[in-house]
Length: 339
Ligand code: SF4
Image: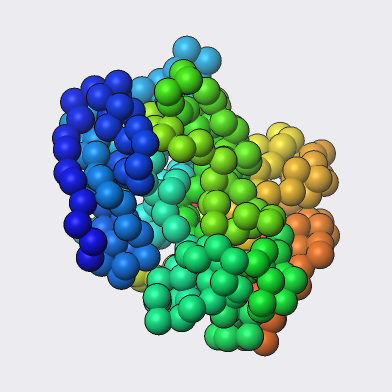
C-alpha cells in the first residue's frame, strides 16, 4: 500500500479544498476504496475523510419526493420508514447487496461510485486492463468472463486500448435508475444535478471512467421523484449464491397500475452492462397494457436488443429475459407479495 496523507473535513468547502490538485480521494465508508488501495489498484496521495459532513439526512422534498444525503448508510436507507413504504424497490435492492456489516458502513454516495468487480481489474498480476491501466488492453475478452457485460460494452479485441466489458456491481444504483433518481453534486464551480441515467457511463473510448463526475466533485445527495411504484415493486437478483454475491443479472421492476392495466413502468437491469441498463422504449411498451407474461416477454426482447455474450457468459442473455418476465409478473401481483 502506498503512503498517503489523511485529513478530516468538517464542511463541504473544506472537503472540496482538500482534494484540489494531486491525486486525492474522499473517504466515506471506505468499503471499496480501502480494499482497492490494499490491492494496489488505487493509489491516492491524500484521503479526505468526509464522514463528519452534514450529509446523512433523509427528508421529504417539497414536490413529494425524497432527498437522501450522500452519507446515509445503506442499512439506514434500506430500513428508513419513508423508503420502506414509498420506495420498497430501493429497500429491496439495498438489502440484497453485500452483507449486514458492509451495509452498515457503505454510504449512498460511495455505493454510486463503487467500481467493477472484474477479476482482471482487481488483480494487478494481470497486465492488460484498460480500466486500471489505460491503453494496456483487456484480459477479460479472452479470459474468464462469466460476470461480464452483454450490453453496451466496447469490444474492439483484447489488444485495443478502448475495449472493456466490465459491469457495474451496484444493486442500489439499479433501483435508483428504475426510479429515475438524480444525483446532486458540488464542486469548485458550484452545484449541479445529474440525472442518474447520465451519471454512470458506458466504457466508450475511455473505459477508465466509470461516471461523468468531474475531478474534485463531491456527491452531496440523491433525490427521488414522487413515488409511483410503492404498491407494485420487485427487485429480483440472480446470483451464484443467495447471500453476499454480486448479481449475474438483476432486475428492478416498478409498475404503476390503473385497475388491471399498467399506467407506467420503471425497469432497470444490473449485472449486464457498465451502467444500470434502462431502455425507456421498453417501459413505454407497457403503458395501457394488462400485466400479461406475453407482453412482458416482448419487453424483455426490447431490453436485450443488441445483446452480445462471450465464451463464459452467453447464458446471461436468456437468464436476463427470464428474470425480467419473472420480476414484472411478481411486481404486478403487489409489493407485499413480492417482498
Ligand atoms: Fe479491465 Fe474492463 Fe477488461 Fe475488466 S473488462 S480487464 S475492467 S478493461
